[in-house]
Image (tube, rainbow, N blue to C red; front, side, top):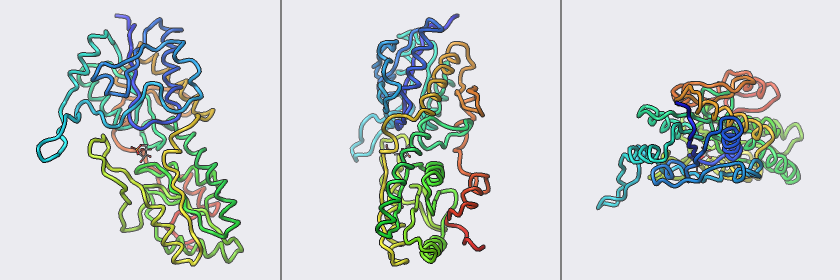
Length: 369
Ligand code: F6P
């Protein structure tokens, strides 16, 4: 049976490039496969509530350069654990509404579902595949922490945004002889901090994968002062933690599919560094700036290729697979491989060694060790 009706949804935190994937899917559907594409509104919420728009050439035109997603997204609506209200004590009650969502697919005659999301959303996609839906995943997250793909889309734009901020902070740090601490996103992975820090000339980069010792950072800053550099740029991933310390949690969002929100480590690091070095310090938290705005050329091309490949896979299979960048090729890999574990920085990897080789302090070993 030929597949002629496919649905797509964008799910979880947004990332620059979502519209590029939607456009690639809708255009390949019309130009290559003669298929119709239904876009569910606000992620799985739209699938549960049967809210959708039919995507075509006209309504996917002029969106490649736009951040966000024309379909809307949500990181609160897991159909397998859906918030149903509160009990008498005010505690949230969750229920499984996946059959209701499946019913809407059947009623609309949807034969395959493309889920554009990170590990949480792809986990849900995998659960729908177990229930018999032909599912295709597209790897999205600025954090770049998804396994089984060399890179996720949105990451390149995010690191360019941080790099630009670091360039700006560099000049003011130098003028005022200050320590500038920049806190970046990334959840439990340090990819954004490592890549943007390297691109932006950071002196210190702190990541969750390498617990830091503040004395090592202080020594680095003091060495710079002795060399006549009375300022330092410190890039801190939101998930970075001191040796034997804890990550700094900003909030618990009960109804979220991923309830812990990290944040605040930048302020903690800046306060201690200022006090212990005697240098003035300031913190910049880039926050959601990293998720917004126009995608880079790399992300526009990557998302176009991923969208086209996702449509091809939705039509021909293999289903329950994710489209993935491997080397210079877009291939398919089982979704199970992508959600098995998070992709983290390997402390002994070539990129970490390169960072150390150019004098970047990662907070774990003294320069002269
Ligand atoms: O996963 C993307 C991400 O931006 C993380 O880097 C960050 O920790 C989290 O989402 C923030 O989530 P929210 O948009 O709910 O504040």
